[in-house]
Length: 377
Ligand code: OGA
Ligand code: MN
Image (tube, rainbow, N blue to C red; front, side):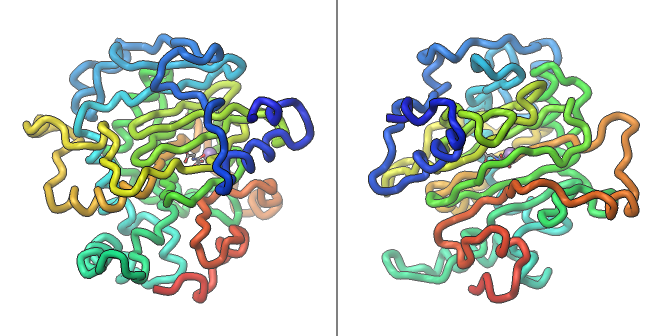
């Protein structure tokens, strides 16, 4: 049972990670906190948000329910950690799924495929994947689509996986819709001055995981880290300030939002497992088509057309997308100069990248220093 693993001890967190990652036999999920079930676990409590910080209209335009309707929870022992159980309006999650698949991977944003491919090829990730999906004969082994090979996209200040830093030089405009969504969520959680400056989007297939890490490259740790989940559910592990501290397992379902702030901002965490849907299972209800009326014309979350949604559905039935949004610089803060940067060593030993069993080089360190041979079509 998981309880015996969660005891204090040298490698409690790693043990927990391995426990939930295991395929055969599959683990017992009965200790995984499920916030969609409310206060069923004694460590879970209701958290008050700031409903007046976001107008009902602003929330609606971003595809969110009014803040007073949101179900927000805290977790005993993790001050500053806030879990919001799917606050999206029916039908609006589709907008974010489409943006993550069709639009955000495009230039000027950066993605893992850029390391192996020319800009003209990665410009057409969506188009070429749709084409290949259409020509696939079911049951036959076919080459993977580019969407199936997509692991991460960075936005705004582009995270450098090698140096584990952000810099003034590697910056492109942050998407306005995601910036607005993030602003509202942060404001509702008590951070009205939050500005979305960097995004890491993670794309998980059903056998993917994300290793144990801390997000500490941002220069201002007083600003929260926001995390949005779509598609398949995942087991998320929240640990302590030290890598070996014990942790707590929780499900993240489609539409759930997690906010790590205050003392929880720099806690170790990981995603050991994606919870696979049974073959042919319908999409989780929050991802299904919403009411048949179009959202207001000024809404950020515009209705996704049938054709695009059909392609998104095929992808998201077997995948999870996670958008993490960060503020990098505090007010008046600037990046260290290149000289200062050279003088400092490049970060700790933590790595941070979705890894999948099917990836050709499963060693994340090697995969990051990509060579042409590691992804072939
Ligand atoms: C991250 C992260 C967790 C998730 O991108 O830093 O921790 O739920 N993501 O995918
Ligand atoms: Mn993280």
